[in-house]
Length: 194
Length: 155
Image: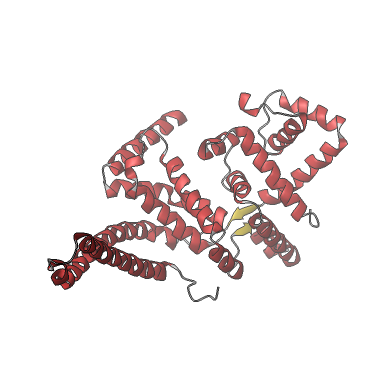
């Protein structure tokens, strides 16, 4: 039953990609609607700012359409899109001017899922959680971009190792190594609060 | 499994620890990890530290975007596509028109039979190059000015 649904989704995506490849904007619009949230949150995890994640993810879609001749209907559209998203995000982060502005404009992009409930029942605990959230956010922002990427895909997008490896085109062992290094760095940064 | 073969025992232990805290241990790996943790107290301490990191990050989530973002999302992408075509047409049109204007301006000079041909070609190349650079700079200024929300920040 579930595999039939997956097959139907894949077939419909293949048809949309074929139409988008031929320049059909309505079909491309359906692909945008299907993947806009995922692209936005992928960018948010990488750049840590709502406005920039919105701008970069939209730009990624625009570039994907402009380069639609490279779309392969037999491959997942999101894999193609994600490559553009991450390239744009990494370039954005490498821009020294952007880094400077980002430091000045730091905004919260992470939240503690239990924070709202805790705030209602125990304000002191809620403040503690909020501070921890800020510390984790700052520690993640200091990670090298490739480690941060793997950590975000694992922790906030909930992908499995195999899915991360396929998305990034790297071996599973490399995914695990990057995660290890990312978590080791996080552990060092959060030593006082763990 | 071949993808998870490791070069050194330390590397294998690290990756087993990762797989353990992410719930991705394969069949026989759990026993192997337990054995390693029993044999190496330092590894067990590291495993416990990573467990705590996992608990902390697991409790976090990306902050949700305001719902109205999604209703305007495709419209914003669409306008970028339109603008892309607009810029190409604008650039081509501007280059042709400005080149023609410049050409008309230097026509008499070019028509001068006494001027060597290589000077005429150089003059033409210089004129067209200047126009292309001018259009490119204007386009970049307008484009960056529109996108760069922090342009007034002192750098």
